[in-house]
Image (cartoon, rainbow, N blue to C red):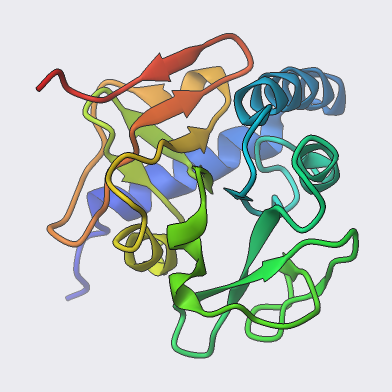
Length: 196
């Protein structure tokens, strides 16, 4: 007898199906709004950690170029997936290549700065399939960002880029899951930090 699918896996599949169903026009409009808002958030930052969206992910393929144009040269760090699925970081200089571990991922060539380089970022953007009001983030299931986020300084905003319908009432979590502090959708910025 096979095991029933986990809540995370079922939700993941549903969200990926919904992303695939988006029209090119709707996706392009949403991505343009996300990029404009993300650029406003990073204005004045010296170092930002972000990612190169996979096809269909919020932000679209031009996200790295747009962010790099807003921060000082060498100030945008993008991840490079290591064989152990942890994330190394590389300064983005305008070029992306197929990922060495997972070819569908695009990553910058160039010197790797180490897994601790994310600790130098003033703002961190992360991919997500969904986020809830507690900051719980549903990723693709590899655990790479959960590991990387343990190295982010406590005062640094960690912002998930989402389409509007991916901000959910609840997301299933496990003990190793790392929350985000905010969600950015095409329509709004949602601060998820709890008052202290």
